[in-house]
Length: 171
Ligand SMILES: CC(C)(COP(=O)(O)OP(=O)(O)OC[C@H]1O[C@@H](n2cnc3c(N)ncnc32)[C@H](O)[C@@H]1OP(=O)(O)O)[C@@H](O)C(=O)NCCC(=O)NCCS
Image 1 (cartoon, rainbow, N blue to C red):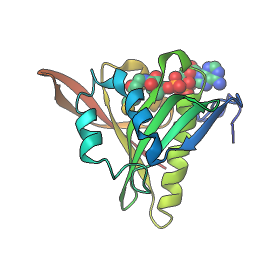
Image 2: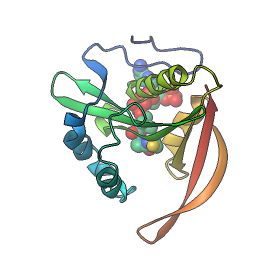
Image 3: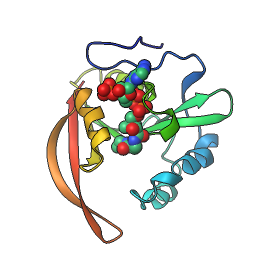
Image 4: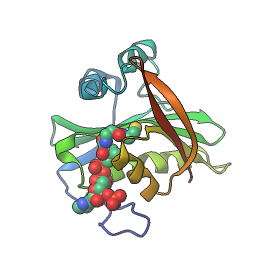
């Protein structure tokens, strides 16, 4: 399951066995929301989004993967969305700051992309996401993993307009 570091397309990921990527169930949602609290500054709509779509998460269409450390702690997550006709969205990817740069983000992205390929066996699947242009490490992270910028637009958060990039990758 765990790839060695140094893969050709930067799909390298964590090979420390204490971390496990698991698919979340509904019972994990309170912890998912707790985990997303540090993101509310950049994404204040998250709480409403979770409320409005409460039943939609942890389904085949909107799976959530968690990185678990031991039995209790969650240190990273990816929320995916499969909207049909090959389209897969990485709605949210987050690794706790103290656990970054050890391959966990790559591992989550890889898990999501593998599911996207399996979900769309009859068409060429692609994945996409939006990222703030000023989050340079995140933009670099996706560029290094084969994503290309396909659009640039402005997004308003708490009366502040920030530039966002839409990034896409054919899988
Ligand atoms: C973007 C984000 C998810 C990346 O997570 P991460 O766990 O740090 O990602 P990785 O560890 O897989 O890769 C990051 C860097 O760590 C280093 N790294 C990766 N695997 C490594 C390993 N096995 N050993 C040592 N270093 C490693 C590399 O420098 C890598 O960068 P590069 O390969 O592109 O040069 C994280 O920075 C984050 O949560 N950011 C805030 C939220 C965000 O902006 N999300 C994106 C928009 S939704």
